[in-house]
Amino acid sequence: MKIPEIDVDGLSVTGPVRGDNQDAILYPNGSMPALAGSLHAVADGMGGYSHGGLASSTALKTLLGHLQRAHSVPPQKALRKGVESANLDVYKAAQKLGAGRMGTTLTAAYIVGEMLHLVHVGDSRAYLVRDGRAQCLTSDHTVVADMVRSKLIGPDKLRTHAQRSVLTRAVGLGPFIQPELVRLRLQADDRLILCSDGLWSVVQDDEFGFYTGQVPNVRALSQALVDLALERGTDDNCSVVAIHIPGFHSALAADEPSHERGWLNWARR
Image (cartoon, rainbow, N blue to C red; front, side):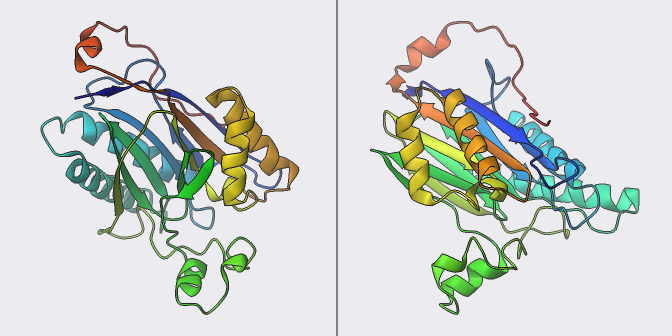
């Protein structure tokens, strides 16, 4: 099996409107302990319900913990079960707190060898940038996205409609969940961008491809995209995880020892 080289960085900010940051991001900084692949994720706690920040962080921690215990399970099945576990944990936390309903989006990219395995609930997004062109890999689980798919409104209304953020699926709102799964083969020099709707709502799809080609590395890309969203007056928390796959090497090289350091990053400020 070929092992991907991975450069990754992320950033999450409160933004100019919200009083607190209910987003959470996860990405490896060093080695991911006890995982078959490399896990990256964005979760956006639902601001209209209680404890959105707790919902997003709980969902990511539960997903990570499940994958750590699922070495022999195929990645797609492990991701599905991981989101189902995250959903139950968020749902139970709401019941325990007497908080009514708690919910969060969850978009996670699990890279195992040459394969990208995506799991997705809600309206955070995953983009693939290949040869300078950006493709959205996820479908928004929102009322407005359903209206666009039904051709009741045009796609140009997706970012500006008054009900843009009304979700039809979210982690934690009930005891059962139906995540969306995507699988594709990665190529050398591919880039992936995971982001909350506070970012993509003010950044057009083709701009993800443009800015990827304008900056030297994933840290600069994360900062550039967040800065752009802030300049355009995003009205929500704003989060991004940027991933670059420079290439692949043989599995033998992966056997070299690594020193575990911080692998889970919460970037809230």
